[in-house]
Image 1: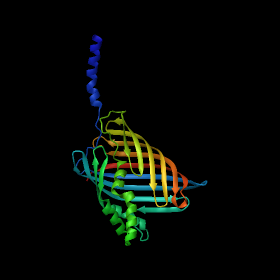
Image 2: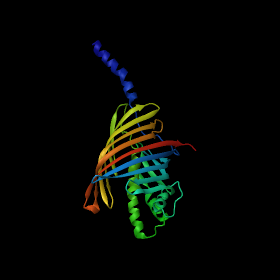
Image 3: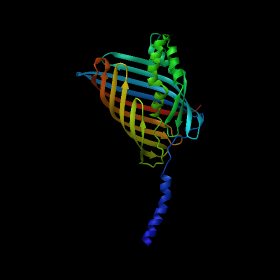
Image 4: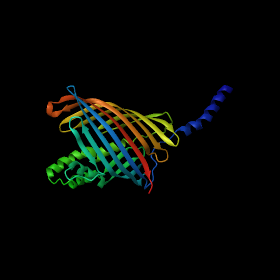
Length: 298
């Protein structure tokens, strides 16, 4: 009997500490909070064409600002603006293919640079749930139309083709899914250190993520192991790849916003060339992406 009483006493002594160790992880932002995000990505693509390797590299640098405008019971309405967009693409066969930096003066004959400079001239709006899932993004139709017009493209048929192509990368749905990769990682349940949960990213990159709360002190430490698939269809080819991705995040405990995100991925599969009777070219893509986020104080 005394042994049974001791077990009950031990349970009730332990119970409060079990409750206290459970944590709600979510965003805790205030109206007018301003966050500056810097993104750097390095991507290497290798295609094996009958023993001859075509190697391409993409270097992407971006900077953008989030400003919290409104708070609802379950979400934040946030203004979003591109401050900088830089993309350099090189090929071991064709040399430099793309060189765009909206921070530099734009040459009159660089049509791509003129188009992408329009990214920095519009303010978009997004609604983000408190676990980081992006509910909506709006304003991209006007932004894309302005990008094409400001580039001096007047032919209506050409404009329509380019607008549809831009929507694949910068449309409302595409940007919503893209933003989620730096915001959507919190669970819908209370967790303690060592707990796991899952979520899914969709879009050009589909990822099934298993998250772990690695640590909780002044910062929130998270990591994820993911199975990824990428299916990209263009006029000339369809790329179908699968692989793995590792993510590590350090987030501010007070606001919930990440301070540092590192993402490493590797995927392989095939590129089917439409104009070559769907010839399949073995393709590998490896990438490293880093996000650094700072709260901006005016």
